[in-house]
Length: 283
Image 1 (cartoon, rainbow, N blue to C red):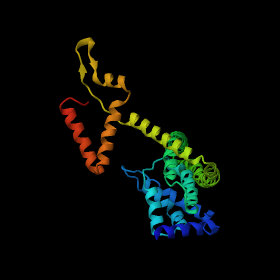
Image 2: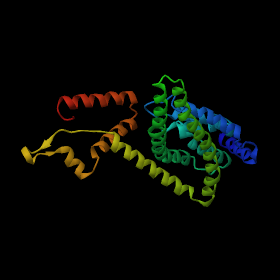
Image 3: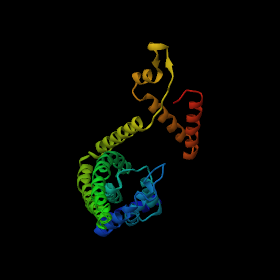
C-alpha cells in the first residue's frame, strides 16, 4: 500500500507541479551556513547537511516513508570545506528531484556522488580558503589593527567573507544545474551506473589515502642486534606500505560492524595505546 502511494506521489511530481524553485535553493543556501554547527567525531557534518536538505525533502516527498528514507540517506558521513558544500547540496537537490520523478532511480548514487566529490573538493577548498584567502585577509587586517586602525578587523571580515559568500551562493545554483542537466543526460545515456561505480572507487581511494596519512601505528621493536637490527615496522611496510595503519583501521571497522559504540571504541583505542606503550610494543 505504501509502495503504491509512493508511486502516485512520484507521478504527481513528474507532472511538473513540484519542481525546485530559486526560493527552495535559497533556503538550502541559508541553511548551509550551519555546516559546522553540529560537527561530530562519528559522522562530522552529516546533521547540518541533512538540515540543509530538509526543505527540498519536504517539498519533493509526501509520504512519511519517502521522507524518512531521504533523511537517512543524508545522515551518512559527510565532510568537506564548508564554504563550497553548496556545490554538493545543489547536486543532491537535483538528484533527489530526479528520484522523486522516477521509480527507477538508483538512490545509492546520491551518496556515492557525495562521497566521490567531498574529498577532492575539500583538498581544493581547504587550500584556497584556509591556506590562501585566510592568510591574505589576516595579513591585511593585522597590519592595520597593529596601527590601531579600526579598519583592520573590518577588512579581515570583508576580504575573507565576500569571496566566500559569493562562491557559496554561485555553487548552490551551479550544483543544481549540473545535477539537473548533466546528470540527467548521463542517466538517460546509461552512464549513471559507471559514474556511480567510478565515484565509489574515488571515494574508497580518498578514504584509503586518509587512512595511510592520518592513522599512525608505531612499533619500536627490532629483529636482530647491532648494525644488522631490522625494525619490525620497516619489514612490515616493506611487504605492504601502510599495512599497520590498514590493519588497525580494519580492526576498528570490524568493531563497528559488531555494533560497538563510538565511545566504547575510543576507550579501547586508548587502552591499546596505554598498554602497548607500557609493555614497549607501541611507541
